[in-house]
Length: 289
Length: 289
Image (cartoon, rainbow over all chains, first blue to last red; front, side):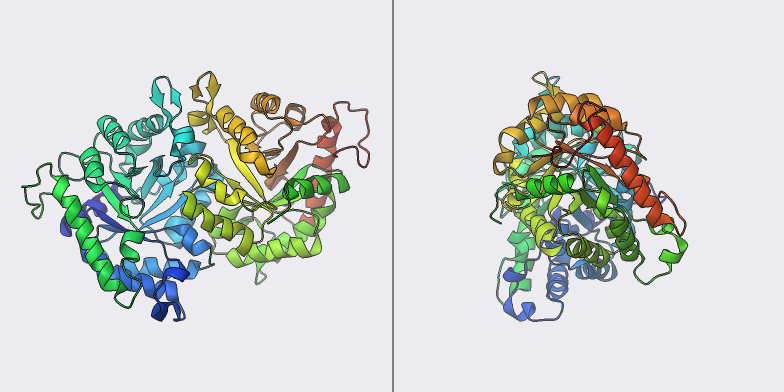
């Protein structure tokens, strides 16, 4: 719990090494798993291991979505998945996407769950309860805290767009995180790929604070628009998550190979736009510094 | 999944039967359990069973807080606790306090977790992601959906107090729930006992929508002020949660008896104020209708 900004540094190092801003979302649903996997004793773990191994060289991180495990009582397979990633692909950080949000004493329990029990490198959290609900996570200085800002769903408009003092709620959240909560250099913001204007607006006010951008691919976010709006001058500043578009690229026996190709394709598509000039080839080490 | 408003009806029936608005919060922490319980094979379950049996006649519901189980990998004991309450005290509903909040397809998984896997009567949810993040829970028409509105912690002010169009964020949430989300009669709002002014403000605009009011007792909320501000004309309209003040009333072998007395005392204190006239004795059937 000592190294300042270690999570973001690990993420940047992975992005550099694999020349990739792709986050692979691990959202297993039993009914969507290939039949030959579904019949195994630990189908979710077996599926995840194959997806992870197939996509690791084209990814900068993995993001298991907690609800998909919790609904099935598969906490043991979630834990085993995270351990597998750490053991086999130690440079690739794990984001536990559980969108926690509770008052301080309870938030400390959730931080314990995320970082100690599951050993995740970072966790997603909801800002509605304010600073003392996020502070217990921030104390884990070598881990990342990824705060919901502008989510990717249609309902994001219901409250996140309410304007106060000339700024919408999501912008208040973004500015507060950049100004105060990120003192330890371990914060990121969730901003949906489905809202590229908001990506650009927030990028303009938070310096190089990195974004986790869900909903490219299956949920319809436009890669080019999202990357142009959210990137930083050095070609980093964001990771883009795809779940279904990668892990369910095929439902047959070739699912892992199909996932590998989907991850590589997304990586290459992102790299076309991230350096501002599609003619500039992304070379090793130029992506991040 | 058919009976409209069944959760609120069950809660009211329990409040009437036990003449109580007390919600007993089940937030077990291993280091706080009595030594003779801590040494048992399933200490959390054993502790909860004794607390539940001791307090059931003075309570209208139980509220296990998810983080306390998740941090320890004790999902099995959480599930066993909920089953125990259903079996031994079938009239008393269970609120699973997990403050979930995610986009629609994922929210459906969390609803499955709460209602199917754990068999909870209701669940707490975070409104930041808007309507489509809450809709999957609302479809379970016989269950309750308890939406965070004004939380009890100091950080509640950070964003919940932002004013938009002359109303603060928490009020936008309250009005939206009362107007739209509660069409099935299965919603409640979380409003901290630490903010009685806001309790009164929201009561004035949401009709008789019931509140879950945490943080009486150990967290410092004033019972008289909270009850006067939040009650409805019929003496219902809210349930007040106490966790530590009841379950840790004693750390010795008498912990269950101490919890029983603490629950009864809180019930009686609440009843002093809930009918508007401390001289009016709360009689069977007058509390709720």
